[in-house]
Figure 1 (cartoon, rainbow, N blue to C red):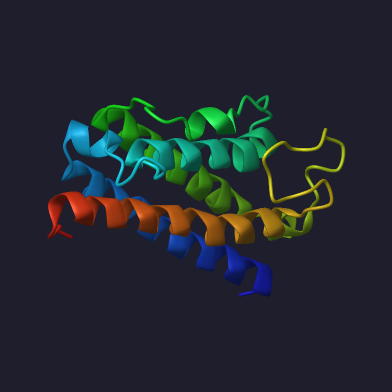
Figure 2 (tube, rainbow, N blue to C red; figure 1 turned 90 degrees about the horizontal axis):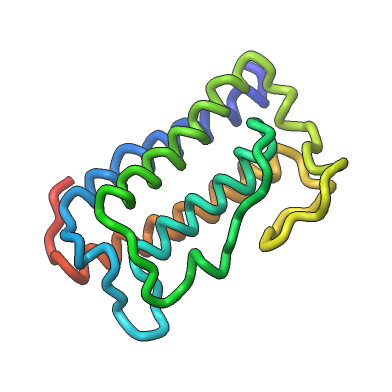
Length: 166
């Protein structure tokens, strides 16, 4: 297996794992748990799910599906953001399904990892990436960033429920 395909397989392994266990965790929560904040300054699970969705939209959908960037990062972190448990499940599943779908398609053309999809686009708002970033940069950044937030979701869920069933 060539190195780029190996990288894609590694990304798939990680994102499939996140896709598997985060919905299992959210299923165990109540509607109130989804919007609960540990402190006034903390994010709720609703905020974190909205942020994961916004990140995937901006970093994956606009590149691979030619969808306009409609991200509103301030809304993702709005105090009092309302989201049902069903909406949280839908967004988290859709987020990881989109990433997995793109990576699966990329296995037939792994050289896409080295392309620079943002070169001819307006600069991204709210992004750690720039117009010179490659698809590999995008995937590496998401590989680091999204598990940080799924870890926060796990921590909040444990604060609310104590023992969780895996």
